Image (cartoon, rainbow, N blue to C red; front, side):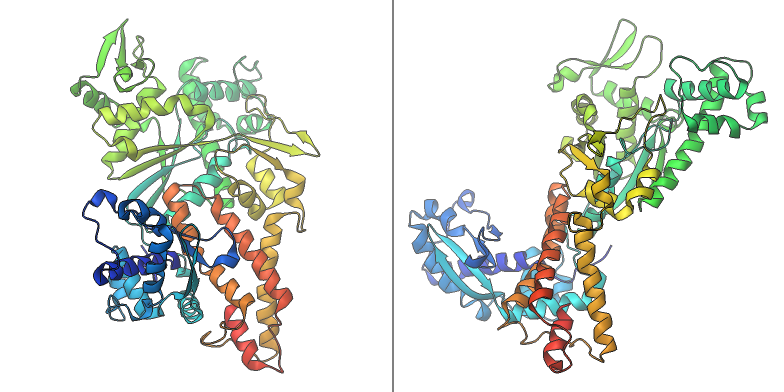
Length: 568
């Protein structure tokens, strides 16, 4: 796990507001609140209109009711204290305190203030009681210098409660190649894992695959039928990939599988599904997605996980038998009906696997489980969380993220897909056509709850119509500027010291760049990641404007060039 260099700027300003309030109480200009329930949370956000300031807080309006005073009057008192923030008595930490204070938000923010200076440049009070704060140029320069020193570690933050999180995603059945219709979970899951790790959590990425059951047996029957030249079963699988599997099927394995029937279907199906699973793993690796654990559904039965989970439910008194089947009393937890765990035939339902999987994961020491499922699984959410609660686990530690459908469009027409008929575009084909970056961007830029129309032709365009190209072009410009500077014998300054006070364009770009830790923090808190691509677009837009309005490489003005190169 990596240590953050300092709290986000927003957190440092939040602590400055808190110190101002504490000083106002100490001075007697505001009373202490005796009822803890009246103490509001201090919120610091960007104003709706940038010209109002860099950050703003509505604390004065929150304090109006408990203090029974005008929010404007309270805001004036807080503003006066904020403008004395640089001399606040709370700033007494040593140079190593920012690192040592990780986990204590107030202490970390105080330590960052010592290292970077006061964040407060000026404060304006606006009706009905907002405090609009403009960051001090010296603070912005020092924070930007610290970010440069941190390099690729910049952007990492400290979660208030670091957890060991299991994120299970993709998990498409290995009955066919990973196609673009069921690959959205890969994009959503991988970006979420990256964000959670950057926020200080320990993350395990897991793929759960069905390696037994009727679908796998149908696949085996289909492969064997093609190999032997017999008709494919009505509920079998078709398509070129099935024919390729039939051609690759080892003769010895087919001969050893016995006569036509369930046993042969099982043996051939398990072989075929493992070949497909390996192909899925390779496709995901091409996308930049790697898993720490590949979990077999069958292993939950062979290692006794499902039986142990069932015993936990029995011990809790929420299991009963009826009509020869074993039921979970899900209605006791608000469900509309009870759920079958084991059928009268003795076979377990998928729900049986689900409860075994929950218990098995918590048994591995995870604090929080995240499942990324398709929206068609919404009916499964309540029963699985109910069973987790019945087994003694915290309901809120079992989280399901339901991903909306994707409709792929080419030249205005929808691309239809079906594994059984073999009509689909594979993930590999999509990546070959539009590229990994474009694919990751288009999926990552929308909330997982929003359905997507993925325009394949737009994703291929190398123009400003394509948002990923627009962002990449900003990076290309950065690289070009640095090469041109090197060719001209110009180097970046060691520090931005004094370069931003009179340059609003450069100052604005620096402040925006410093927002990265806040973007990570917000995404990790709400488990929504589309803010990452939105931020990248905003930052690219600001850089394109900077490039237009400020000359960076200028041999006639090496001092200005050095400062602007440091910002670049």
